[in-house]
Structure formats: C-alpha cells, structure tokens
Length: 353
Image (tube, rainbow, N blue to C red; front, side):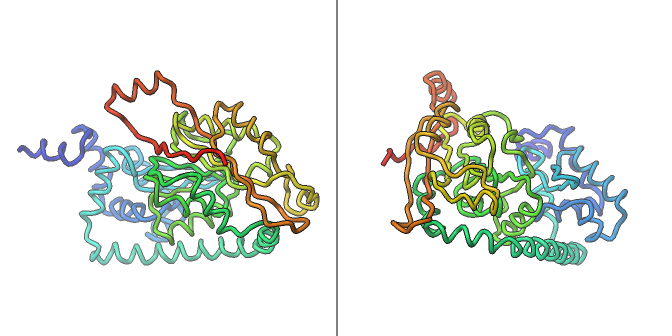
C-alpha cells in the first residue's frame, strides 16, 4: 500500500489538499501546543495567552490558521470566543491523531498542561462563588417538592437507555442534565443565556471527564442547531421562567429528529405567588392538558405523563413530567430502509400511566 493510500485509510474522507492544509495548520511548535491544550479543554484567547505566555495577536493568528485548516472549532459566548479541537469529520480525526502522537512526557507540553489546570482552577473558583451566592435560593425551592433524586429517577425511566447520537438540554443551568444523561449519548449539548451558569457547568463537566459534553451560549427560542439535529431534547424546570413557553416547545420540536423524544419537567399548577417575585417565575405551573396541547401544536405526540407529589402537605409543589415523541412518517421509514437502516433511535417509549 502506498503512503497516500495509508493516509486515506487512516483518515477516511480527507483529501490530499485537506490533509496538507491540516498538517500545515499544526506544523509549528506553538500551534502544536495549542492543539494539545484544546484537545483537553475549551479555552479562549485570554486563557491561551496566560498559559503560553505569548501575545494576544500572535495567539489569535495561530488560532485563525488552525480554524481555517479545520483542526479546531470556535464558538462565541457573549463577548468571549472559545476554541476546542475539532471533534468530528476527517479533520477532527486527524487532529486527534496528531495529539495522540505527541508524547505526554514532553516537558513543554507537561508545563502547558499544568498552567492550563491553574487557569481552569481559577475559573472554577469564580464559578463556585456565583453558585454559592445563589445556592440558598435554589435550596429553598427544592424543599418545596420531592427530592431531586426522585425526579432524576423518573426522568431516567422516561427517557430510556438510549444510546443517543445527540442529546440537547435547553436552559442547561448547572449542567446537571448533561451529567445525568451524558454517558448514554455520543454527544450532549447544553444551551443557556447565563454566562455564570455556563462557566459553572463547564467546570463540572470537565471535572466529571465528560469530553462528549459541551455547553454553549444560546437562546432556547432560537437554538443554533439545524432541523432534526437531536435524538433527544430536555426542558428541565425551564418553562415556568418564560413568557412564551409554547414557542420554546416548538423550537425544541424543530431540532428533534423523527422518532426522537422531548422530555419536559416542570411544576403542576400551584398558587405560590411569592415565587414570581422571589425567583422570577413567570408561570405558576402547567396542567397536563395545557402542556399536552403545546406538544401537539409542535407536531409531537404525548407518550407519557407522570406526577411526583410530595404528599398532602400544604404549600408544596408537584413535579410533572411530559414525554413527547416526534412521529416518523411512512416516507421517512422507507427512506431509512432504503439506506440500510440508518441511525436507529431507541423505540422503547413507556406508555402513558
């Protein structure tokens, strides 16, 4: 086998021009160091200037060349732009191969990793401070309903084992849903508008070693994903904060693939008016039929509904779960069959209780 044949076998779908551009993108000492760092964490320009002790213009130029070569991806989060090593496509495969070939015993790379850990630790401490400042408020709401462990167990049962190609959590907050379902998905994405929450979630996911889990700044009314991009979407304790929950459900349905699942977790109707002022709740819960109509209006079928009640105590909240599924048309079934089966979604949907 020739050298060209060997490279194509190692990285399917990568043309000679693409391979040359990618190798040039990594073919400089600083760029190789950057690639090694971005293979382990999401970092911005400020992070990289601190770790590598180089000027911002120099770092920005290296990042531009590597992004053009497809070795790294960039995403905006407010005024910041974060970078990470490409994790899909032939360029991503080549990026992983280049990093894997770099010896971990290299002293320069080892020092870079140590500095990166220091930067991440400082970021984590800032995120922890934000969380602690708001923890009392969240804890007070948790005392009003059943234990989180019971809610998560019910969510686990409703969503099923998967595996999922891509699971999306809208309004991800602390990233707990990504932690919970990350191990059963090839890729999990969380979107939120709160930058402090995203920093906290990113810290938690890095500590948990969930490299397939990512968080992004994004509006759940306008999710930056194409149609039918996800096998499963979760809206966990989000809708009661919104002025237009039906639009959020419709947007979640848009990014859901045929046969995929939308899991909504929120409160049943209640009369705890103090939550409007104390915790910015816009809606005091949702009835089964009320949210069922939202699912139906978004083209989904309600497959399961469940309530978790804390008991007869007055002034407590009931947590409700709705599981919707996007129908698969006969035409789509035939298309899947003609393609040899394609991507199979977990079809084990529990029936309504």
